[in-house]
Length: 432
Image (cartoon, rainbow, N blue to C red; front, top):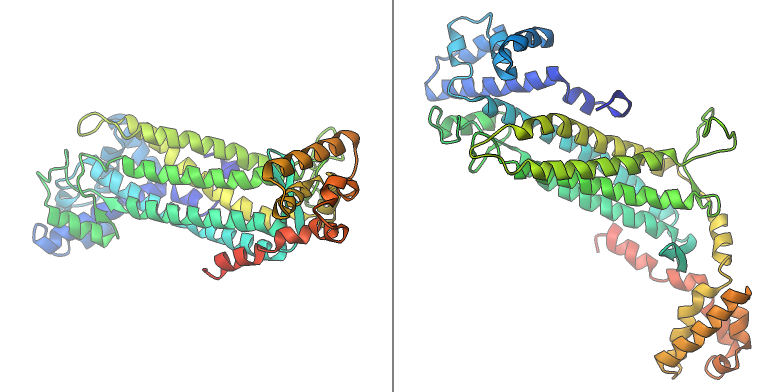
């Protein structure tokens, strides 16, 4: 992850020093389990803890020679120990430590993301209530469709964010497993009892069945949940990007004092946050594909997944965390122009009420096919000639046979389209 998008606390979580700290935590949990089961003398864990030292540069120097990061870690950490060093990494393989510690990092990063998304959900809910009764134009295929509530857009984003929180929570729980089962996962040199005790010490569960590694479908589920959450954020920011276009201009990204939008054009206020988040979502979907590729490894394992994960897991978690935090700022400080929404509403010259007119004709006795034909022909004529649809309806003799003139104003009331917005909000915000 480049520094530009690395935010605390995830930035520090994935640093090499923190990784070595997790490796040591797992090793000490195993030694403690050995003490409990009588394989190691009492007090061994504290002796090791007091003499263990972590120095990133020192470990790196050893790795230059041995070309193996876990061996370099063990050699450096145990160099000041006495006889107690015999119990350090006893019966374990490198992946026992690496994968179990990785689960700790995934769990911690996942929980941080969930907290950030929870903040985003709350902000979306607040904006939904503020703009619940604000009429805006609903668009399908980018074309004016029918009036709707601007707050309903925020509510939709909030509910989708909540689904992502649930999805990520499930995947974090799934990832909260470790394996301390030896070289091929059959407990040849360490017992299931020791594994259970050690993992309980660090808050993990044993993997039901492992090879030399934790099965990678578990991690693929987590990365897939991250990619889906990123795509949901993208859906929201694509909406804001469109609404910020000059021709639309119903919202704008916050633009702070001193900020500049273009090196060439002083007037520009560009949707740079939304565009940045869109790009990040693309990248995270790519990581999901890479995570799926990591599932099929040779036999009890190979290491083709390792290089992928060293990049993918830190980047993916930090990216989504960044996206959640930036989205929170965007939602809280979004500039909204209800007056412009009304102007854009009027641009369709009342054509957006065509369905209401058609359905009223059907209710009055006209066949649906005939009502659709009549309203469509009138609508297209208004569109091509730049006429107001309401005026055309008022002048139509065919429509006048079914709809009284005093009913027409009611058919063209945009508030009609918001009459069931309150029940939707109640269903969501009141839990039904």
